Length: 337
Ligand code: EPU
Image 1: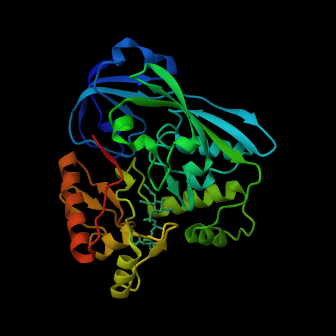
Image 2: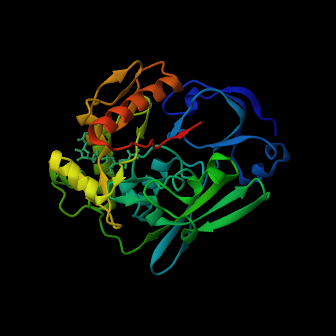
C-alpha cells in the first residue's frame, strides 16, 4: 500500500474548505486496514466529509473509508437485519432498504454522508435517530490490530452523540468502522411525529403513507429548507440544539413567548438553535465569506473561497450574539480537524 502524498482535501469536505493531507489512502476493503504502514501514524478517518471543519493542512494520514456492500444478513419473525459497508452513501442505502420492502430508515432520507459515519454522531432527523434502528457494527482497532464487534448496548447513543464520538476513539483515529448492521422491525408504522412531514403529506393528499411516500416527503422538505452542499457548501446544522435546565427555559419563554421548547425525558428542555440564531439577527447574514443560510439559520454556509479561519470567525460571532441575547451557549456539531 502506498498512500498518496500532499493530497488536496477541498473536494472531500462538504464545506469546501481548503487543506491538504500529508498522506491519503482510500480504503475499499476491511483487510487493507491491517497494512503495517497505516499503524504507527497520526490518522484521521474520513467518511463523506459532511460533518467536518477543515482548519488547515493535516500533518497525518487521512484514511478515506470507501468500503462498499449492502445485503440482508438475517431475517426472523420480527425484523430484517441489513448490513452495509462503511463507505456506502447514506441516502442511497436508505432508498435501497425502502425499495427492498425493509422500511424503518426513511425519515433519515437525504442526510449527507456515509453509513460508517452515521452511528458516530447518531444522525437524526424528523423524529428518528439512527441509534433506534442500529443493531451492531464492526470496526478495526489500530492499537490492538484487530477487528471488534460493537452491539447497541455499548454505543451510548444520545442526541447527536455516541461512545464513538469520544476523543479516544474517533478523533484519535484509533478505530475505523468497516460495516454497520441495522435492525428494521417488520411491524412498521409510519413515523409522523414531525409537523413538517405531516404538512408535506397533507399537501400531497396522502392519508395513509407508505415508507416510500415518507421518504419522498422528507426529500421534498429537506430540499426546500436546506442548501445542497454541492451548490452551497455546508455541513447541515452547524450547532446542536441546546438542552437547558427547565427553569432557564421557563424564564426564556416568559421573555420570548414564541421560543420553540421541546421537553426532554430527563426534565430538561431542548431549544431551537435556528430560532435563537434568527432572533439574534443572523439569518441570511454573512461575516466575510461565511454566513448563516437565509432559509434555515442553523446552517452555516461557505459563500465561496472561505477558509477554516473564516468559519471559526462567523461561528464565534454567532455564539457571542446568542450568548449575549439569551444567555445560551451554542456548541458546534461538526468535528474540527
Ligand atoms: N427555526 C427558526 N428559524 C430558523 C430555523 C429554525 O425560527 O432559521 C425554528 C423553526 O421554525 C422550528 C424550530 O426552529 O420551530 C426547529 O427548526 P427545524 O424544524 O428546521 O429543525 P432544527 O431543530 O433546526 C433539527 C436537526 C436537523 C434535522 C431537523 C429535522 C439538530 C442540530 N438539527 O434541526 O438535523 O434535519 O431537526 O428533524 O438537531 C443536522 O443535524 O445536520 C440536521 C440537519
